Length: 308
Length: 283
Image (cartoon, rainbow over all chains, first blue to last red; front, side, top):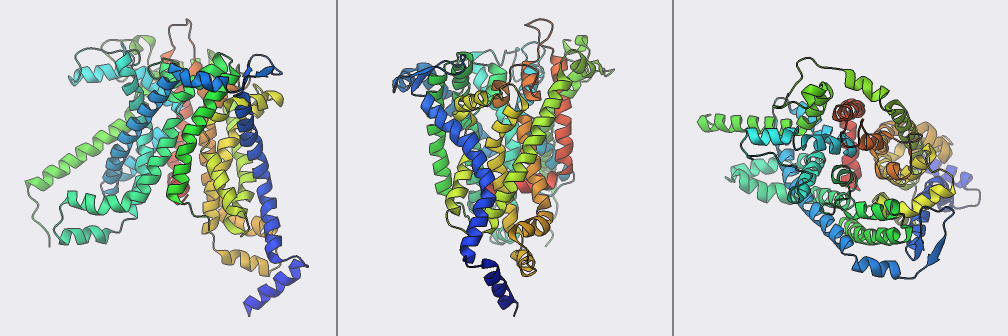
């Protein structure tokens, strides 16, 4: 009865045009503003960046005067040892920080998944590092790392972990670990929150069954938790990897353009803005885009995101 | 069924409690240290051995942030840029999310994947092209330049989170409106909008935080305090001399911009976690 009423309504509203086509037209109308804006702010800049990468252009002159140099910028890029060094830095940063964050995040997620007094406060505390702007957290840690007045040296020496004060952000060997530690502090809670959502979807009966079968906690973790957490773990991992590959803020604020920690993004911005090399910097941008793009494709394919 | 609670049980409980406390300290200590430093006099700040909490907390650093630095102006810039970015993203992202979450049409998959892809765009990959766009539109060193460029990450993100919310809304609601003779626009405004409110709050909050915290574009597309936002100001804080950084002021400014975010997080805790996991896990 109701069904036929809807059908009749649809037929009347259609006025010759099929419902299918009417709905499609509405959909495109609703999508239009977003698509136009995305084309303007993502499509056009991407097109211009690629175009500029084949030219030699100075950022300082506007309107731009550029002359086409073909693949010259890319040839330079392949031979630029500083570029490859920054690629290596970025990969080291990504692998180490995401690795530690995953293990630590899983640990914290399991901790918070247990019931204990003050659990609510703990969950709130987990959101603090996530909510703090990266620049602010970088400045906070930079002050904590200070070689003379820094609290890190003080605590480490009080705990007898180190016997003297270190210049964490100036010592070539300590810079990268110091920068990675800040990223770990800032993003582990985010990882833990994503994993916690996954943990909470695991039915308790499974652990109950494991207990009846006499499984120890480690067996429970390996046989029940890990396999069921795999989808959530995969998403969190890929998310963080993509994020870490484009790292800029933390490194720029804490160690500037120092070659020991310089990431791909920091080097590209240095070329583009500080040196005004719009052409060469753009070629570098395309390089970063390709590297990260490969990860995005892997991401979309491996997840097979559902639309309907 | 109940096992006897031996020494081992209590030991493991104590170990667990210690672990919880350690993790808690790890998470909040840097913020505690920023607050403590911001309340110190210069003598306490540069004292050895270190002063962990000033005996008489001083507020002068908070005053100096506004008198010695143009921080009030930076805060205003940040509020306007992040606020307008969020409103714009919700407005145009909301209708797109409705189309993607509700209407069946050809090409939807492509559009959805396209938007998903843009949301993962590394900002650095379009920095040069974006600079040219902003210069061409005469938006360099203005709020509009930042608002426009922030669309590149807030809009896809908003569409994405909102689409997952729209999908959760029962279809019967619209069918009912449809029977009553509502057009798609009417059903969006009268029926879906009220139901979508929680989704809009979540997406808006996350978009606001993203825009508020953004650094790379803000650093590149502004030259002075005319449009400079808070993160850039905090990164570039300078003191009396080039070599002495005004650490107490930097910490005071850091606390000032972080406290509103923490309050927002406290109020909307559940929503934020729901939004993050909706965006991330469901895709």
